[in-house]
Amino acid sequence: MEVLYVIRRAKLEDMEKVMEINKKELPENYSSDFFYEMLNTYGDFFFVAELKGDIVGYVMSRIETSFSFSSSPPFFLRGHVVSLAVSSGFRRMGIGFSLMRTSHEEMKKHGVKEVYLEVRVDNDPAISLYKKLGYSIVRKIPYYYADGTDAYMMSLKL
Ligand SMILES: CC(C)(COP(=O)(O)OP(=O)(O)OC[C@H]1O[C@@H](n2cnc3c(N)ncnc32)[C@H](O)[C@@H]1OP(=O)(O)O)[C@@H](O)C(=O)NCCC(=O)NCCS
Image (tube, rainbow, N blue to C red; front, side, top):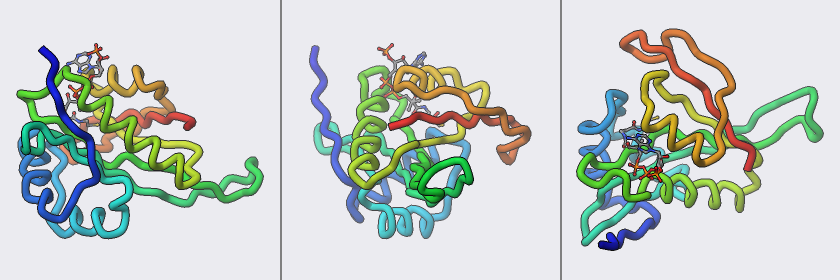
């Protein structure tokens, strides 16, 4: 059976549901101010998945300016995927993949050349998703998370 969902930009009225999904599905939670600020400042890169009128997933990302002596010009834009989650009843339907792809396409339109993220080293579903999208592991960041778990930094050239 085909499950129809749409990926669209997040709106103010989606935020309660987004925060609910974040609390339920991820150990990394943020203040409501942070979500509203992400929406205000980086709303172009904040997407939700809607299925039968309900929000079942979200991705929020921001754009950062990076500097490198070895690149020309030395300043370039990097996308940072800050948070991604799909409600547990709606996984393995391609929603996470579609949210990420949509976010990448939008970042590319804004001149982003590279996107990166952090993921728990034991989060096999997420690591598999990122590898399927073409990400590779850049390095391990020891004790990155509040509970002491290490992170992988992963990146993708857009
Ligand atoms: C990670 C997460 C967002 C994936 O969302 P999803 O909608 O289920 O992912 P998709 O259906 O788009 O999966 C795309 C691909 O990712 C990989 N993948 C996803 N879930 C997987 C799992 N449980 N085991 C192995 N591979 C998995 C597969 O390659 C899959 O392709 P396939 O179904 O054709 O095999 C979801 O599991 C989730 O919300 N987890 C909790 C929150 C979280 O960990 N967020 C990421 C923090 S960095």
